[in-house]
Length: 88
Image (cartoon, rainbow, N blue to C red; front, side):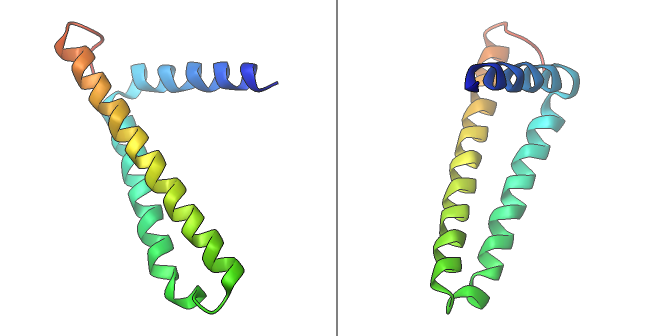
């Protein structure tokens, strides 16, 4: 079940990358940064709710991991472009 979903996600990601290029990467990165800041801004209001605090901390860590992944993917695409790979 997971394999077809992963293939479909990869196809969609590649399709969006080939159609939109850098704006697609920028949109993903900016969206993740906005979400991280939103969660951080909401954190003080949730300090007294232990369950919510743990969930917010997890969400922030998850979004930071996605952001690191996105920046790494962008770096990989820059390297591929510099080596004669696909153009953005």
